[in-house]
Length: 88
Image (cartoon, rainbow, N blue to C red):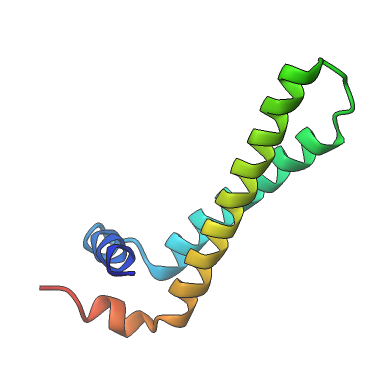
């Protein structure tokens, strides 16, 4: 995940802390979970075409949730001094 380290470095260069990056990711997880819940609980029948779009959106949201959670896990496993130590 070299690109994640580059992103984290850029975040550090802009004075974002590890906690601020994690807070942003937690916010994105919350937004995606709320959207997913809203879509899944909406029982309105708009027909097969819209149902197909709904299922595509559910798959996309699930993908993004897995992605954001994996970033949280990766960042949590990286000591902050290692992140800051990459500064030039």
